[in-house]
Length: 603
Image (tube, rainbow, N blue to C red; front, side, top):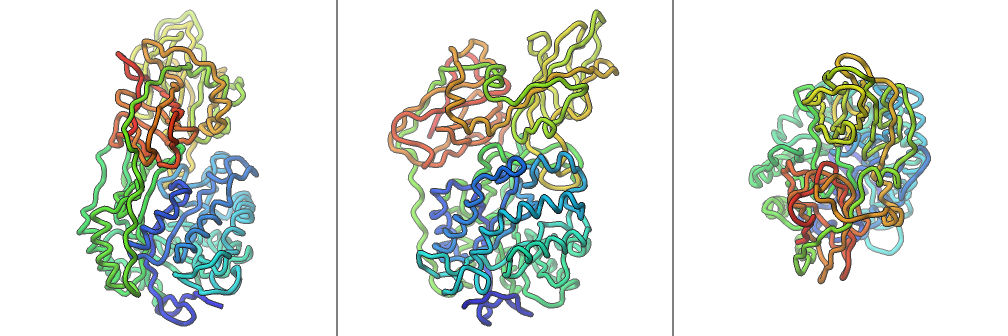
């Protein structure tokens, strides 16, 4: 029976030293039909291991409502079939440029800063979640406690689940960048072992004293995350852990992008040389990311700017290409070629051939979206219950994770014009006064340009641009968190109704929404049409002239688009398309292109 263990100097399998050459690939950012291809690409890159996070909020959107947790097990089975080991990072917090760092909105809303601590309510929720999740992991561990005996490492084949491929499980995630509650970390480690994790546990943190001391657990392997200066980083780790294998659990070989900012690109040669330095230190490595994929479904998170991560909101784009060696569409890059050359020097034998690139759409097409329904109609068909509130409720109070909330409030009258503004707006509001669009408000610009006289009815369609996934403001509420004011007077008595993006998962309800012709002013709303495709394959969907919103193709949620860039097209996985007619839904939140048909293009 194969056994993976953490030795004094090396990782070991049945007593034999091994070096982990791992790469991050998130099963939830890759269409399931493409898992095998992406795993084959990682094998061809020279990797023997795959690392993945598990986003809690994706799998438990409401308390006790679990969605496809079995996907974790299916992915681990695919990893094993590919002949690779697996490292699982179950959270409960994952960062990952993912909505709320993977924490459910229904938990962070009421608990606030008590999350990621020893707070009993938080610990109880985590334990309940792990009781559901961990059977997908523990039955696939390598060695004693796993599903059975077998080859115990990369190359193992067979139709059963023996053994593994799971060799390590993480306790929390970069906790030293956030907190210092050692009681909480030790409790989590205990929960993992109590629920059947028998493979080694580990932590990962930045290579700084306060991060390692705040995020590590006694007698649990500590690893470090960095993008360069490997020798210095490992030297810092050795000050805290004199023994144990060295591993960079996140080698940042690329980076992510924000809406409205320049794309971040790392020179391939620089990244390859930094990888070489890690390996020359005798360390193991996990490329973050080896293949980034896509934050489908509007699940992209956000950051806060500034040194303390407490500044302006910086929402993440839909693409999670990450400037990775394998790009968003699964193709090898120059970085792939250079890193493959480095990794080949440390491989046990010749590397597999690079798989052919996935098929692409044979013929580019353009479709006219000729059906339209206003946002009010969409909200009526798919929204949650409407209610009256003394003050504006947050998204969390309305049980909205990703999506919109329509707030309506009355300015009493008669009264002269005064400034109308929103206190604590998270994140963006399109405002109408007496049915006429009056402007767009943001956290930085919370007041309408023109004053408002009373009596008037004000509607505010507020959108979350992604909950913060890193830093002290992780878990902050969305919506109107402070109030609507006329001059300095709060306006009380608010009607509010939420629209969750996952309401669009029920395709028949979406198709039942009555639509009419596209209006001349291209107003916000749901635009629908059909695009005829011949020769399906991977494609990019472009929306020239559109402003901001979300797109679905055949009911599959591609994610958010936004004219501010830098992302100009949305990746459409080939398995989503079909020969013949394909439904396209666009939920435009500010305004479609005027002067001609409302069109989208696939190429």
